[in-house]
Length: 316
Ligand code: UGA
Ligand code: MN
Image (cartoon, rainbow, N blue to C red; front, side):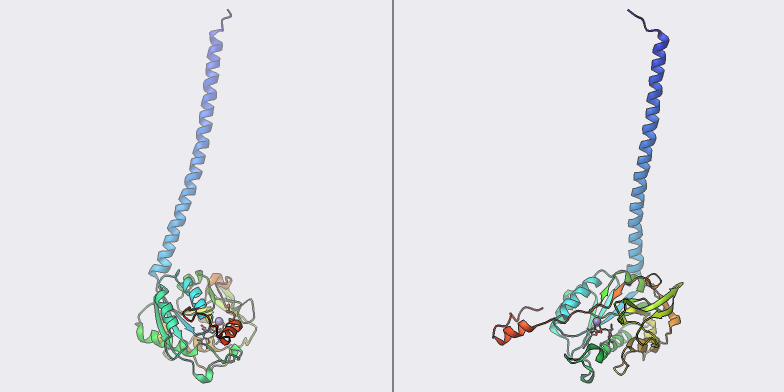
């Protein structure tokens, strides 16, 4: 039998040990790297949650209330529009909805709707003067809309909120589309702020055109550019302290077409120089001037004439 020399055995053993050592070092460092990567991921995930919570508590829980005035009037699509709007608003904290019906008295539909909507609200009514009320056949630009209702909302704020209260005023029409980010932007307003409104003024957007360092420097508009504020009602917010400072500021039916916003903002003694630029230096669209198509009820009318009306207990 051939005898393996002892030195060869030693060499083999040493080689084995070296291989094992190298293997151990390699797997250990690999595992460590993997572990570190995994931990880093977890830390960044947790940081995101903390940031999100901070943002929520800073922007929504602790900052002052947004008072939004919404004029609304009876038509087939009213409940649908109010439902869509209210379900956006349910995501907004510290929000007080002032809904003003264009009616002689509060309707059952809006009363029931508001009591079930889950929002903090005030329900008011103010009928538009008959001389300024649009007829069904009129083009909608013929008369200013929402004038009496917004004034009633402003009076309610002036009479029911203490002038020392910190808060923001925003006019919300019932048929626009609002991004939740907008409400965070509104809550950074010092005196007055503005941002572009999508699908407004016959343009992709209308309102602030060029903004720099948080200031509005020019307007982007095509129609009546000489207006002091060529901007849609949905394109600005103001600190409510201005309402107590300038008690006469409001809306008028005598205002020429397109001047409602300018009339109100100049009544608060504001100029373009006061307007803080929001929405990423006014380059993001966070609200759209959408309009709900008028419901066509030809078939419903036909059935009524035929004496086969739909169930009157079903509210649409
Ligand atoms: C545009 C602006 O976005 C409005 O803020 C502005 O009041 C209006 O023009 C105007 O120039 O008067 P637009 O979509 O054309 O809005 O108007 P609507 O949405 O039909 O009306 C604005 C608000 O007033 C809505 O909340 C609507 O429900 C309310 N409204 C309308 C009434 O309360 N009564 C009416 O007879 C009509
Ligand atoms: Mn509208």
